[in-house]
Length: 518
Image (cartoon, rainbow, N blue to C red; front, side):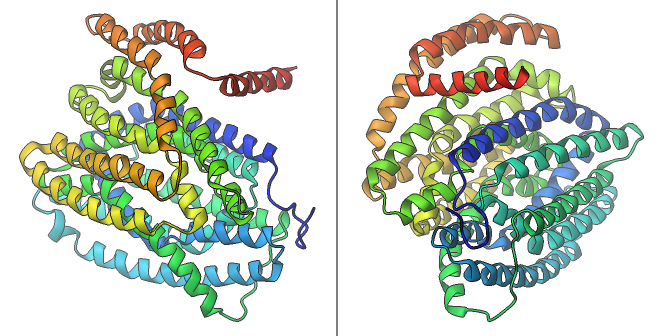
């Protein structure tokens, strides 16, 4: 069946699977490039320049909350209108969002100008005059990048709603490869953080333009700047407001630490914290690869009135798959993380501090990561209010703790404040909410997760005590240690941790690779 715009009504299961696989390809490539490129960047920039670069990025990250949650709204309502065969409504909605985002760009420009004018007042206590002078042009370039991004981001959301994940992910892969190659060349010739910011801006704009061209030529998307429907806008705004709060609180968790440490401890502390956050982002990406492609599907399930059991089963099945990946990454990091950081980040960074802060993030973060389809379910149902309000309260407490503990205990104190918020909000409160209100079978979910955890826990504990006294001070020694760990962990987890469905997914994945190679 086709909609009036000539595009198939809701993407196929094959497109979803391809999207998830390509998501993991993007993650593996992104993490591989991070593993290979970031050590080079850290050494070429130096700790002070990298800390400055991370601080500017974290400051601009606050302005991204001006998205106001509309990205998810575009995806949700496009998927909804497509399921209902409403073409004109889609076209008018696209025009409405482009106008809204254009207004948001003006607001971002004003807010960014205010930040620029007050850089000296905020950071002069712990930063040198030279650092402040280098910070200002980077701030302006990233602000320009953000202002251009807002109105053109609509087209990326449309592609997601149409479930054309293959194009999206191939575009991202191309951008990753090309931009990294250019940045390596620039660093080699002595360019610093400002050059990296320019490269990011150029490639971001190129990707936005490619999305626009794909929407026009491949999806035949038309944009109508007609009557502004205030009733519909009110509905969208109510839906987006709670997502906005969610995004804002994420910024409090993962960007405020750099800001606070920049004000009370200086760029060296920001650099250490930023390396741990970069590792946290790598870890988080292994989970979001699956859940990020499910919003159109879950929206369709809700629109069709599928019951709690079907959604609960999807929640558990997705969580198990995510846990298969995360348990392997987490236990491996516990065993080899300190040695890896020493080789990866280099002598300018205290590997024990980075390792400790990373684990403070990783361990409590694992729970919401294996349950992040729950957020997608809430978005599809338009029920983000409770989570967002809860997040506001928990994040406020976490922010106060970050300020207090950063002054007293530095980087680790800031990390413990972030972890406390994760435990209270995303583990304790949200699990109760999923069980009591959303009627997701959380008890069955945890029974299955605990059964899956026996092998990872045992192999991790034994391996930690074996490898802690073995010197893994070269890339080859560390690689051999990791291979030995994999040789024990993977067969045992295959036999005792995975069910028949998960084994079938793995077999199917490798069968496709073998067929492609013939």
